[in-house]
Length: 228
Image (cartoon, rainbow, N blue to C red; front, top):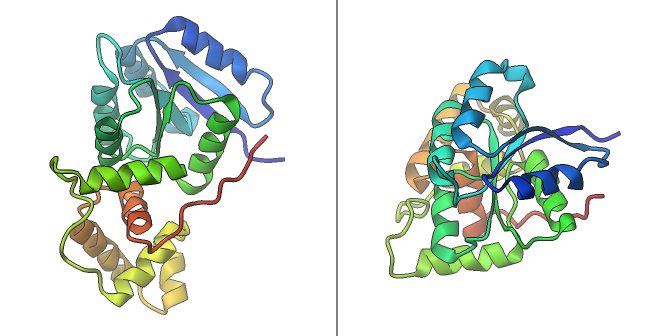
């Protein structure tokens, strides 16, 4: 049996929240454990819950009141850095998409996505920490090459061959200890390499590191596995 994925959803459209809850009501491996129409109430519930009862990931809309999705993502990333976030919004646009990825979200799906696409995104994010469709990939390339201000995910400073080795293993979800064993280095050295990668790429977290690797053809896009 596959791992159970516990999900939270935050969207101020109550009918949409109810619809998503019903959508997964009979799914064997996905469970909606928190549903909120108010982002501030969602944050309050997280504070009250012990860490072990937190959701694995949260689906968030962007256009909400009184707190919108941008502010909610920022709050989550400041306090709950390991909580994975999937944006599910009708504002699936290049500039919004690029900005949310810079903030460290794991995936961004349009609300028009079908059930299978959503399941695939949820399961892929749960397993690998990030999900990009091929359309996302092209959109990100276009965003990074546009005249608007570029995100700090690409810099002129190149990674060393050893940093690229470490980067590839990070993308494969190896821990610092596992990377150290594979490369015959100390954990402290791997930690130093990881920090250098963050500094050079401008990434803020592992999602940003994986994004950098994908956009620079260091790591391939995850295969489109169909989950049922």
